Length: 368
Image (cartoon, rainbow, N blue to C red; front, side, top):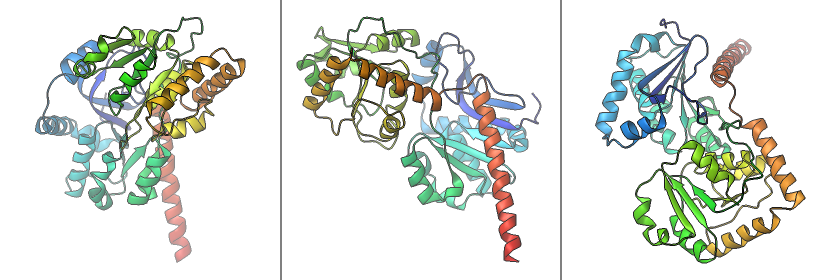
């Protein structure tokens, strides 16, 4: 592709092929017309990505060097781009620093990164306040959007609600129910597992963390418990469909932990038990979710809530309410067909820049 790409996405890694697995929102393949993905390393499948990237130990210096090299090797493409979208914080931080040093021209550009965690923008807060207006951050929850806008100014912050592949995650009502599923890698309260097992709730813990084998050594001996690490996507979907409920005991954190897992469960028609946390509060409200959120991580409260779900699972009203939530999720959080999300993001960003410019000119004219 020529250097005339209007939208450029920067990422340290990406998958070439999404067949046989759910698409992930904002992944850099496929891209729309006149756009380009600049990727540090391409992988053919999840197994290769896990083995050759996620499990390899990389220090901060090594990752910083790789990010800088990717930018340097593709400087001409970035120079001509109208919009640059960084899927990794290091690429974004380097571009901010280069712009502040006068080594990268950002005028007329839109340069963004997605902030999964508050630290994504807080660590750059001082530099962003001095950086050119081209540099912006996108937040996936309203809580994050409000706090970032307050600190950085509304002109630097964009709301970007998260999406999932609702075509991959769909209900399978005839699948027999076995164990509750507790999915996820970070900010999960592992200490709640043993008390819930003791209260008669069977659990499958699904994660990518091999360290959980040691953490749950005692629970592994219990026939009501199963630990599944690095499950294939089809296997996870089967576990999800066979779950009476998905458990999301979220520890306090600065991000929207559990949001993707909750969306996947709602799309699949599986009840979700979760405590109040960033992102999940908003999701439950937006989807009019029929299962009340828990106020804390007390095992007794979780066991009672789980028992209520078991009692309601054949209730027509409960089933209808879950389906209504699923429809609302599909309406607002569905990944679009190949490349269309990127096309929408680019078009909306350009329109916003034009409107901001017109408002600025109008204000200047009125002032004179």
